[in-house]
Image: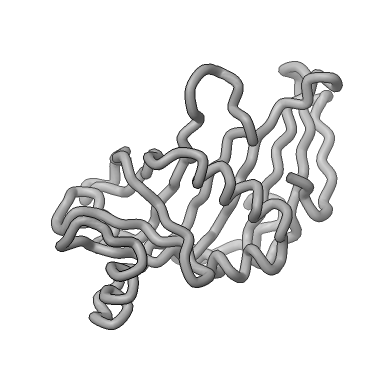
Length: 188
């Protein structure tokens, strides 16, 4: 059993929250994450194939009405994966070069397929995606941001999950003795 996680007898059902819920709980980290995703148009989505192996695909994301949305061409493999198993991981495009301005940002969660005609019509009106399209509303299970503190020569990891406090981990070098964890509100 991992420290801080209750033992489970069956499949684990993760706690989730909306983008707005995360944004309300951790506004500074949410702004950093959103800024990283809005810096570039295309990102990397990982889904679960029918055989259980991972699949990565390019994807565009949209923040609207307090939600994070994923869009896809109808019947694309990533869309079929998400409709069958909503678990996903999403990595922000790191951009050109090695600078990683804003850090490496990743989101994990459940992508809920949207079939409500009114929601689809409102989304299409606001975003004007190529039609037809599949739309998924994200329920967050984890946010991770990794940065490098150059002056301190440390890697800094800020992590958040619903119902758990945000954690900030600082690491210098490759040895386990150099890891320092502080359980507190993570700063961006």
